[in-house]
Length: 267
Image: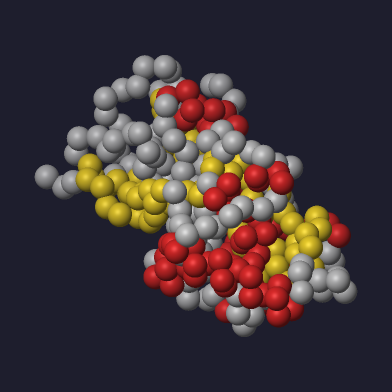
């Protein structure tokens, strides 16, 4: 059998004309527990027996139906690939898509809330600057991650993958720390890429600091490497967190794309 890896899988999605979602990046998939499973015609992405994405055909002719047994459930479909006959779609999450250029001016009434809030932190506490994560002691980074997870215990998603992503990062992962003039760590951000999007993967800030997250997110969108890239940013979803939905709506996404699971219909 042909030796496959995550770069091959991402490229295969592109060849077939499907859009990658927030979870489709080589660094993220390497950090997670999912694995590629190959049979004679299909490649599956599997996690604890769950088929995470639609199976990808090895050859260039896409078959009209997916192999069902033992996969009667697909956690996340891909945009451009409709659920086949015998499956129905159920809502999984949103994907928030942003154009970084819009953060340069943030003009108009629709930007009022985010524009005002993003400026409050530096006005009250001074600006932060970004440094590579290697410049900050690992114990400081681990302490911030622990505090953030403790404060987000009810809404945090897949903490083991996040820790693996941040502390055992893939070469294509971008991890930056935001520190003050004294070198005190206030935030960690991380992002990666696929052929379609910049994936803003993580934004971890010190708990109980009003308006810090708005400032940190704006700092990310204003980075020269983000502004000069022609791709939009996929800022992920809301993971059943209504407050996060309100927060991201105030950032004026260019698109909110619904993602769906596929469930086999019992007959």
